[in-house]
Length: 375
Image (cartoon, rainbow, N blue to C red; front, side):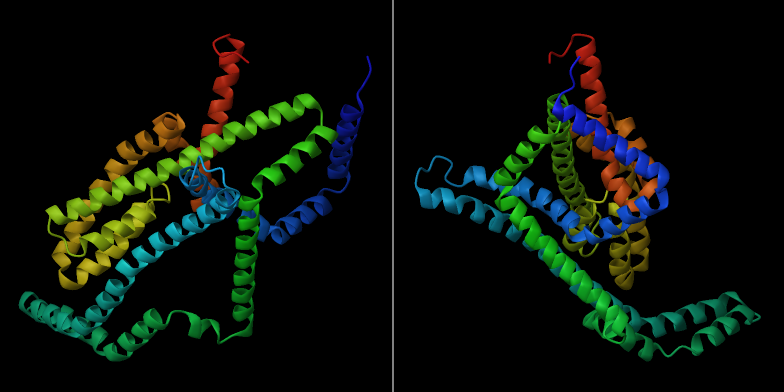
């Protein structure tokens, strides 16, 4: 039996890497960690490119799909990318425009009404506590606070942002500059990937065909197709779920006459892109906004969010997201639980599509072995 050149090269590389990991494990894994930190902008750019490409390729299908002119064909992709980025930026800016001004006003109102609230609580304690023990301790504890100073500092922080704090130390300023530079590099890299995805894909295919066994190349293409389908379906399902949840939150707040229904509902919908716990992020901000004008309504809003979160976590999310990726609801919940325990929010966001990919690969392999699914 003869061994092909590709198989010999591939086997030699695998054996060499295995022996290197056995002899120098610390150095190898340390070098891998350092390499990953250097490649962070490229990894982030790849993630950004994948997310933007999901929208831009749909827009590209709608822009002059039957046009034969060279100018139309050359302009189609850049215009699709520009429109995709514009839509994403407008959605994020719109939500921030709805929420941030009200949140700042709520904080200002909170500090303005806090002294009178303290006096009301003290008066109530005097009526309840005849010995004035509790009320005296409460008064002593609150009298030492300079509410105007606290309000001015909080307002300055919220309105001016963290730029004043960041500029106070050179090390933090360097970290910010490095983060901005990495983001710019990632953004440029993502645009390059989307613009030349066919050329890059063709080059990678040629590289794999020349140096890897044909059977391995076929299996890799198959796994990548399934992975792409699962991840794109997951992102589409997350967006749909966020839209449904935001709409339900807005309508429910309008029915129960909660204030700031539109801004809080929009924030809940956008934050729902984080699986399962996203609604709580919007709920916390909503509680602060409502508590300033009516603490009773804020408590009722918490009850409303708890009920909505239960409906979302046990009914909407498993059905909507699980339905789009073909994953049973019980596996969706199990994947989120395990992913959150392993890597927090990032683990939660990756656990569902990764589990869906493994589930689809195992299901297809089982069907092929049983003769239900043809090669």
